[in-house]
Amino acid sequence: MNEKVKVKHSTYNEGFLEYGSIKTIRNIQKIKTGEKFESIGKLPFQTMTIRDNDNYVANSLGYTINKKLKVPYRSLPKNIKIKIDDEIYDVVKKDSSDNINLYIYLQIATNKGEKYD
Image 1 (cartoon, helix red, strand yellow):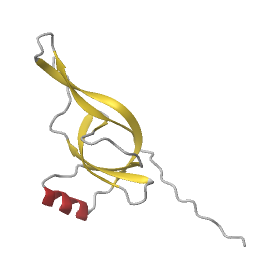
Image 2 (tube, one colour; image 1 turned 45 degrees about the horizontal axis):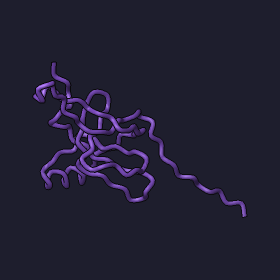
Image 3 (cartoon, rainbow, N blue to C red; image 1 turned 60 degrees about the horizontal axis):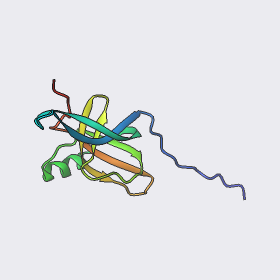
């Protein structure tokens, strides 16, 4: 038999995101002077269309979705922050049905992780 086998693979050609956490910066007297994003890793990503159903579920649970991304499947820590360019996002939902792709639903973080001088 001469059957063609379709190879299904994903592309993540939109760029790289960083994931990590927000760390507090303190002075010698232990007074908070600012915050910064501390990266623990990078992943390639592809931006996905936010479906009406995604927005409906998000609104019913009290959050908004600003971005939906597809990344290679990986176990990410809880309460992780995502940084794309100079914007910091909270991960509000993670979803994978095939253990190949991980879909990450992002909301712009209220805590920007900016350094204050």
